[in-house]
Length: 130
Image (tube, rainbow, N blue to C red; front, side):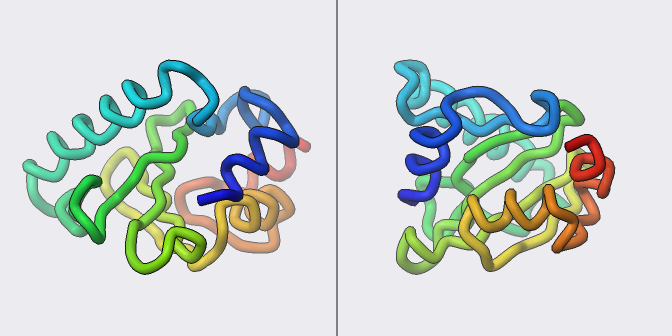
């Protein structure tokens, strides 16, 4: 989705919330290997069964396509269903619990950091740090 490119062009590579939340940088030469590694790790979890097997993993469609992570081992994905401009966000906890947000990545991040949405995985602590 183009909003990741917009985020990278606006803010550059790095993290949010004092680096606790990181997005994968499509301008980095390592991006393909990072995405491949994240997909492989997600497939290993998927093979464990519930609660990790709720969504297939990219390149399966619909499937989870990694876009970031946090320092607590939680993962941020796009759910590749429909047109890429409308892919929902999946925030999956390290333990497998997940929540789906029908928002663009940039809207999701802005709303989460402003405490305009309440995620179970990311506590309001992230927004209070700003």
